[in-house]
Image 1 (cartoon, rainbow, N blue to C red):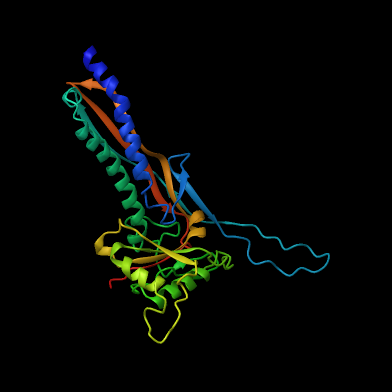
Image 2: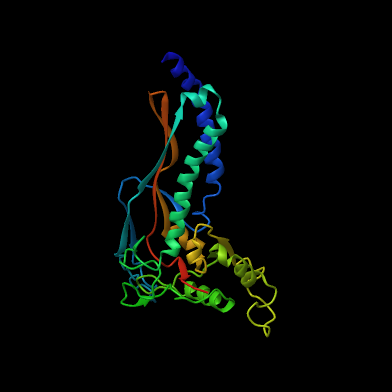
Length: 307
């Protein structure tokens, strides 16, 4: 047992180094930040994201008159609870004794890939499953994308374009919808300064045409494409959106998203061993605990297009 223990003691740093290398490489390819989700560290298991109504519009005030005063009130809130995902591998004494490092390298890389794949796919689900409540529900009890988000002032807001296809005019409509969104007191939000079009792989080339064509790609009668070279809107491909939803598309206000859309972490992907050698085998475990979520809806407009 002493020789076997020493064999693992010598191998452990190399195995951990393989993990560090793989995890670092794959972390650079995580999509959630490009989709607008902001890192948030959970201090308690059930993290409550609260919204407030705002203060309403400023009022005209005469000389020596009391300043207009109004209290904010709680609006809808949502509780985001991280979930744990794991993957384990076994490394045997034969692998170490006969220097089967390519196999060990693949096993460790597989753990990293399994965890990062889960994170990427869940971030994508916020969008393509956002037209229903099977994955996430907003604080108002509705899906992320709906035409009837209830507001505190008694009105409803829409951030859904139904099944509108990705086109020049429909992107203009999405941009206008974002700029017209308001808070629970009816105060219009600051206009968007940095928008991002999110598409599935099946819409990548169409996104290039719509945003980057010199002329309007959908009408020969129009000379200029207002999006081309404007710096106002870019696009990202969410490769983890399944092909069945590949025509869906979304426009994100990246500034609002930084305040309303989150990746809540208990811990990021990590790699451990159980310190026990059983029948010449040592188990190494990878795990992560997180959840994506959003506190409100005014950061994104979406379409469940089919063509």
